[in-house]
Length: 365
Ligand SMILES: [Zn+2]
Ligand SMILES: [Zn+2]
View 1 (cartoon, rainbow, N blue to C red):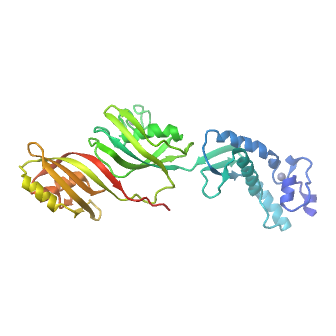
View 2 (view 1 turned 90 degrees about the vertical axis):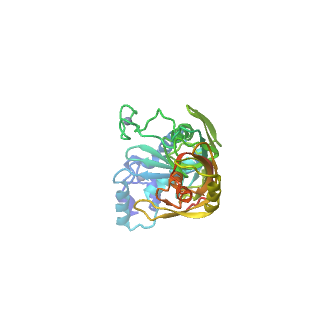
View 3 (view 1 turned 180 degrees about the vertical axis):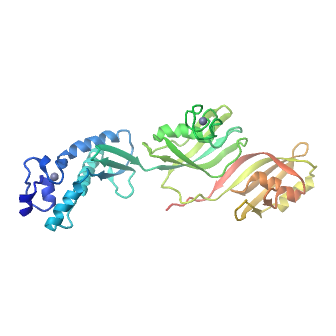
């Protein structure tokens, strides 16, 4: 054929165009690939070396070709009006995928692979991008531990010598840092993003049923988690349980209700009769929560069980919708009706503990 007379092509490059035979004695003289098709096994070995330590069931191979290669093939095809044939890029990625699949016994998934293998053939570089894992779990904690990491006091988060350029105060235990320290190495992930199903004060204890959270582990080498773990902190034990992988990124956070035990201070005396009427009046009521600059939110208080505790003190167990701040429900700041309002007293929440969190269903795309 005419094309073979004009261009030297290696065998795969020639067959791909529909020509019957190779025209280059040395594949390195191939007009299109300059010998790249003979290096497939070598590239496969580079990929396999990079894959060490990665856990995955599915993968894809993405390629970036050396400059000019696809253009040379396009030029040749335009000259000979060849259409609808496999490109050099598709050929390489198919051949590499097949070899990696055979060597690793893993499946190719081009749309949503657990591991995306990116081979830069110009720079001879293999980059790996693991799909993040989303982990659900629940934590309990003693009083005195913050939910989130606190920013470094010296730099306020921008990173400095004091905090080792992390931006965080690594000396203070938090739920976030404890989970990250445990799961990070297990998952081989350096970056984790937490989503909390509600929050509490550092001074709040979270009881045995735990508060739910979701953590996204980015670029994980491993994709399995233990069921849970216990961690000692200076303030007592923290427990993480019910860990499991979610099928994918949740679309939005589920709504939740929670049960809290609140220690309330009052400047005036509250009678037992007052507390009984509080239970009656705050049963299944919708309260308005005005957030500055936002539309008011309407949340439900399901029940309030209160008893006198010491001088001017009240101990209350309240079940309420997530997103309604306990302290404001007590003191009446931006919340109505509040417990202060119902009792016609000046109340302040001294401390609240989380007894139970009931979470709705997660939704996925
Ligand atoms: Zn070639
Ligand atoms: Zn710092």
